[in-house]
Length: 496
Image (cartoon, rainbow, N blue to C red; front, side, top):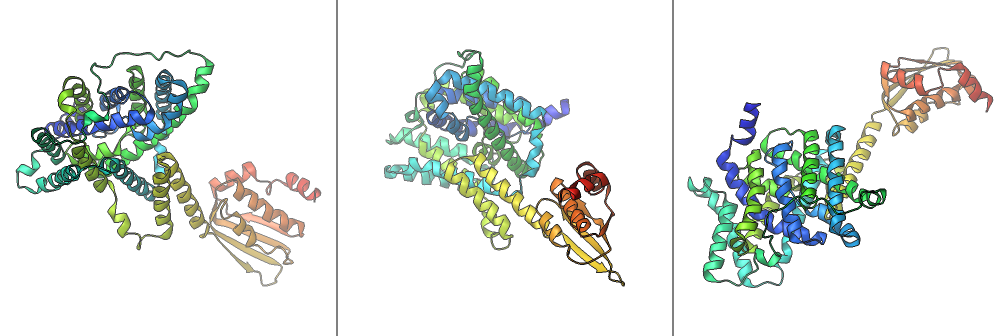
């Protein structure tokens, strides 16, 4: 226990402290922006980011991953806030947490193994594009100083790490924010700052029970929103965890992450915050800045609230151009450039899944919908590919009155029709042997196909022997099939 705490919290103190500071600064404008999207006061997003980050640092399943208020979640709240107000949003946030904890105990986090690599790549690329697109309003119809500051910020971010020794001491994104803020203040440059995004809170969050009636009517109102928030939150969190796993060559506990996200959202709801989840952009900032442990997430959440409450005069003066430069770095680092180079060498089906995921996410700004489309396409391509490996060969006896069919491969819903079509029911035979020793039956559709084949031969007066079923297939056939039940066959033949 002590060794695990040491590893997860104190194995990288300096790196986690510096990375957490960078993340905290980058979280402020995003939390404000997401609050505006959801239609609530900026402090709702800031309080949520603080609570979620601090709680998830202790209970999450992925050290080094940043969770806070997110745009994907904010988009789902708009209608609820507009129609019913903030209090119902807080109640929905609590229910979201409960549903996510339930998902953790049901081990739904394990379902991530059904998400193919091409879907994850598409998800990553789509998020990179969305992160970049989110910066465009800050770069549209602005003065030349904004472009100059952004370019200077990118130069600091990419060139400072190249300096021997010194370049490794301080994360370049943090240096970018500090230097550009100092330049903007000392030179009095008229440029958009964090303070222009919205009013920062001047007090720490307090316990706040949602002021809604505890009855069935309230549940009917908030449940659809809570269910959607729970699904999108877990999906984004688990996808982000998979990406951070790859970046750090470590493993995360996905079911613990589900429970942790739930507890964090309950904490946020009780402190006047909205629901949130893992943030891929901030998580990558954290990893790129040297953050690896839970301390970086804790520092990010704690510094966020301390800065906006006690250092608001300084925080307000941070130029948005500095944060835009950091987020552009994130979008460039997030995008999988190998996926573009691999378009020629990868199978067409893999490319279609990746591109479709990107297109749907970017077009709808709905991460869950994009991943759903990607998983659906990947499943269809996989089923079609496996179905092609089903083969039926046959040999006739010397006398010509018997035929032996040898079935090889996987028989399931996608190959059932091909299985039936492989048999010649018009051939006049006394006996047919169907050898299934090299085949496997996966579902009821496959069992039904076998029944159809047997019944068609029996109607033609041909005796049928089914041999070689493996144990799993035999169990399925015994339970759902009729071809080995004489009384059922007689009933079916009598009806025809």
